[in-house]
Image 1 (cartoon, one colour):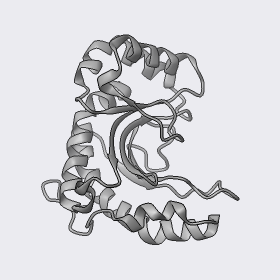
Image 2 (cartoon, helix red, strand yellow):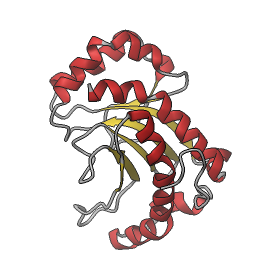
Image 3 (cartoon, one colour):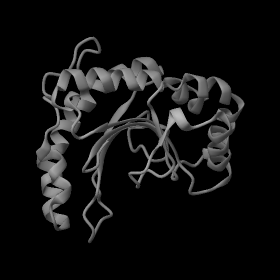
Image 4 (cartoon, one colour):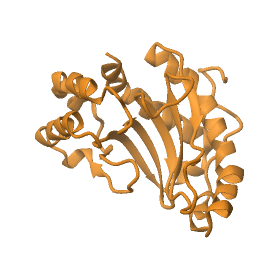
Length: 216
């Protein structure tokens, strides 16, 4: 793991080749490109972020890189790393994500449908909804389905909308809740490894109130 006060020298940024990966036909061919082009970058990013997030979260954090192991026919249309407090997996826990679709990078705090105590966590969020809502920086985005590109700007999401999304998280088994940042594939910051890592650290720091509330 890198020292939390320094950035990781192995990550030089993303490039058009990384995004072009999602235009490759065939499951095996696309997976090979993901493994060769993107996963080494995820390892470097994860190593640069894990200690920092652990320090802020007050618990040890572990890096998980999506393996897409369940896929047998359709190639993945996105890929990601996750950072969670559980060594064995992340899907059943509040976690942070860095990942790519063909046209953007996402930085998320994520609660996805596999989470067993979603109802309890949603209740904690609802009990603190005003403070959590007020903590969201301008220009952030929400998603309520991690498999889809579609997102909703925090600038257009009222407190009532925010509250409704939390009620849905509590009451609907398949409901999800993700909040964070999207960066267009053409954003120059993506080509600068140090600048991107700084932005990722800043983003996850700003989302720490959600993580702390989720952990109770």
